[in-house]
Length: 110
Image 1 (tube, rainbow, N blue to C red):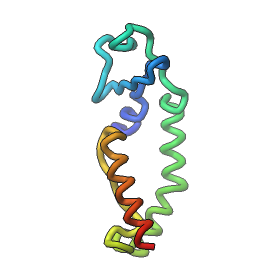
Image 2 (cartoon, rainbow, N blue to C red):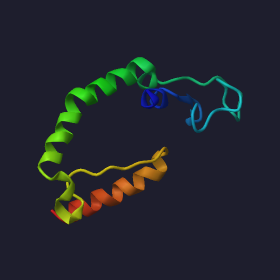
Image 3 (cartoon, helix red, strand yellow):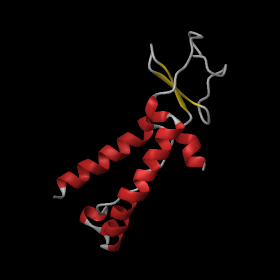
């Protein structure tokens, strides 16, 4: 699926920590860092087999919990935010501030 491809498309330059994604931030030359020309590597947890295992775990462990909380009105709880919240985006530096703000709000309403 598109999700599997997206998750398994991350490559890094180990020396600098630069991250590339084949879908939205590809290197200029496939397999090579834009600045140094050194080879990129794929972390073990970004390899397709690891991504498949994580998605399978989600399907068997997390999805039933989400369904349970949704059935209990999880989206309409404390502070209007509930215990379930969906965040979307493609970059963690954009998504994380939203997550942090929501978590802080949830902590203040308990």
